[in-house]
Length: 101
Image (cartoon, rainbow, N blue to C red):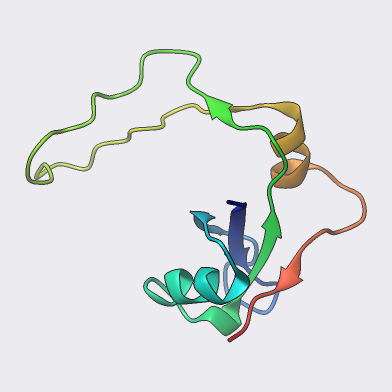
């Protein structure tokens, strides 16, 4: 099943802020999931190639049970593998496409 990176489009107040990484079997399902957290028409997406990110140092432990009262940063300093780093930070031809319903 493909993974997608979704971000706000260039028309938004904070353009290119990351909305999230989603795994969906279709663009329709992706749009449904994104609709849970923001307006789909404000977003654009790219299908992620094989890759990922990892924590070079100790990450915060994942809580089991109700969410903690304090903000916990689970991914404090992620390092992206090259294929994803280029998508997140690289220049060049834009692979991003508008996400709509």
